[in-house]
Image (cartoon, rainbow, N blue to C red; front, side, top):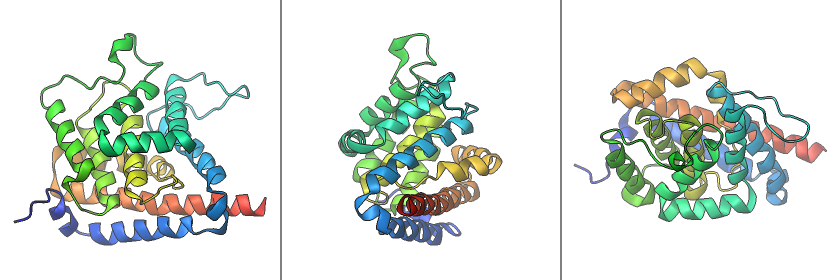
Length: 251
């Protein structure tokens, strides 16, 4: 037997290989010439693309007004989260996430749901449904060191668990995808947040919804396929990052 609760996931079909490909792709894009010194600019572009795609996954608009404001509350929240995952703000939030994941996740919800709740006291407060608190506590233990599985696998688990447990009654999807990003930054998988996996999740939306639901149900095959989907999104997100870097270098 193993003391690592997530170790069995690495035996599911395709998971280990998909995690390796995701890691290699993200590592390579960090070595792109444009990202050796100019990663701050490419990371900002990545965060904006991620925010718009994350909003669209949840049915929000992707239209950005010229004055920088947002008419759609889902998009507004997703873009506030995107700003918190960029630059100095990312460093601060990643630091909190490493030592107090629940606090960082609550902060994400406060940003994502600010225009969606009627009672400000609901911001940052997880659902009171039975079992939610216990599962979030377990998730926090995994994030802070209770597992040694590869970072793409942990990111997929955090993402799927927050979706499946319906941790928050509003903006839960935006929070779940952002928490996945924080796993990537805090683990060193994608330290500058260059990847844009949200683009793939949006393009494969039916599959995203179906497999995230199966993950939440605890179906072993579905769990494996969900993790592979997330790893494929990380790999494709690295390709998206490469296109951003190529454009930055050409410009």
